[in-house]
Every structure is written in structure tokens, then in C-alpha cells.
Length: 167
Image (cartoon, rainbow, N blue to C red; front, side):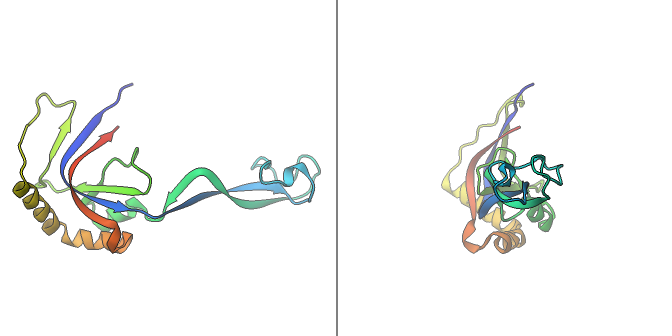
């Protein structure tokens, strides 16, 4: 078993995502005072009746500790852009942040992989970076509008830099 690390150098989009706590359903006893009536001591999900007193089980929704859910589904966004923008580092990404890179063949940027036999070294200056950012914005103008609709105007930022991904 191994690990593969990939880096991308070039223009990308960083979107801030609102989150909310994840919830789950648990079964508790409907009889007050029963030890299975507490949310902290739920019954097995397969039970329809309390194993201690025989009362009917009821379902309660509780917060799932340590788990959060993004308000925006990244896959819905990718489908809305016809995958012209694709997610980057979704498996180990930062909570509340979605990263997108261009899925165009002619997209500017350099992919750096440990599997590559040789690397390319290119010096960048401010003009090169500005040109790449302008080309990215032009190429993805319609896609950026879609991102603004999903995330909000103030939560979408076109950036340029090095981002990494572990798989």
C-alpha cells in the first residue's frame, strides 16, 4: 500500500462553503425513566420495542458529534459546469473549502507528480501569472457565474498557486 502525492501549479478556484452539523437518527424508548429513553443511551436501530421494558421505540434526530455537512454539494456544482471545472483534493480537503481546477486540455498550469521521470522548472513573473489568471477567467466566465450562484458572490475566489493532493 502506498501513497501518491500530486501538485498543481497554476490558476484554480477556491470556494468557501457554509456548513452545518451532521445529524443522525437514533431509536430511544418512549417510556419516561427507562434507561433506553435517553439520547446518550440509545437502542439498537433494529429494535422496534425497548429490550428492557417492552415499550415502543421512537426515533429522534441528534447531532452527529464531530461531523459536518457542506451546504453545497460539490458534485452538483461539477455537473452544473459540465465538469469544465473539477474538484481538487476532495478526499483530504479542508473543511468548508472546495477547490476547483480547469478540466480543459489547453488549460495553463503545471502538474507535478512524484511518478514523473523528470520535472519541468519554469520561472514565473507577475506578467505570466496575470496572463494565466486572465485566460482562466475568460475561459471559465460562464462557470464562475455558476459558482457564484451556488456559493455566493463573496465566497468565490480565483487564485494562482501551488495546491497539493494526496491519493
